[in-house]
View 1 (cartoon, one colour):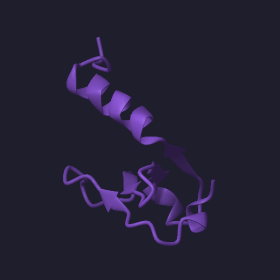
View 2: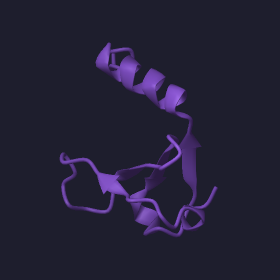
View 3: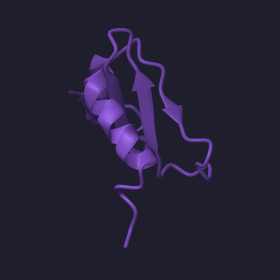
View 4: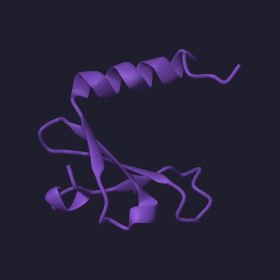
Amino acid sequence: MMSADLPGARWRKSSRSNGQANCVEVAFLDDGRVAMRDSKQQGNGPALVFTAAEWDAFAGGMADGEFQRS
């Protein structure tokens, strides 16, 4: 899906962003889905869209350390 196809999305960057354009932005959509995009595209690129369950599984894995670099 393209970011432009989500006109009502409110995109957010991490507070850990260093102010450059090398960030991931996330939007929590009204229907419960979660969208993610690359900020370098300035809103003109693709967005990945996840169900609430998919996002919760990802966030849970992050919290549990499943994605730590070895």
